[in-house]
Picture 1 (cartoon, one colour):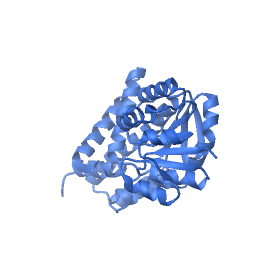
Picture 2 (cartoon, one colour; picture 1 turned 30 degrees about the vertical axis):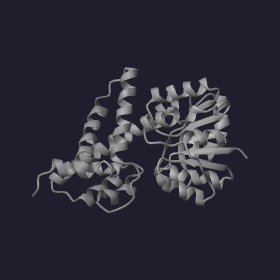
Picture 3 (spheres, rainbow, N blue to C red; picture 1 turned 135 degrees about the horizontal axis):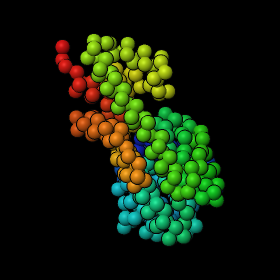
Picture 4 (cartoon, helix red, strand yellow; picture 1 turned 90 degrees about the vertical axis):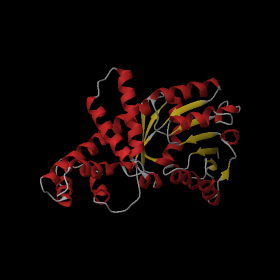
Length: 293
């Protein structure tokens, strides 16, 4: 059985990595903080002292990190993945990054004689834990087929979007309507609240109409203020919106709606909601746009 190294044990990575152990792979893990590493070691993984040590011991390296700065540090830092010989190894990055960053890393990996695949995912912690993510892969046909058995561990469906970088573009395409939906829902709820409508009534009615998003029913308790786990936070949504706008600008695509939604999420972040679930934009906008009565 091939050996796999996994980097990044945040909300998503911490529930994805155990699936590799369950699938029978020899797993090594690295994370900036050691507490989550210890949890994986308790399940049978080995702890790597650095990204370089992990790359040296693994045939395949899977990364699931927060942003472009983190991925560049892990790949290209002094003790990064590419600071050691990695010829013929396979690197799979499942983070959501900017396409130019993906292509930069891919070129660096290729220059070392290794293979790179971008494979960002759609889905939150619950489907990640169940191995039911939607995986969008950018790679040549040969590299995609090499990565597919490992991606199958994480996903209910693996989509080959095209060449390296196109998996990432597809992920941004998927996330953009979601960001716009929550932003527009926030304004709709604020308008209704100002008109004297009950919040629960509005949400239940929308959820039973053609305006319902598939996931809305699951998010209503969060919007109503009930405590719960954060699936995808406001800060991450803003990060993705910036990536979408950068990609659109480089492609010559005007994106006025996306700019407007970015302003809404930026204000929500500045209002102290950065770690809150992205749907909390509804509560923030409602509070800001309605008069106390």
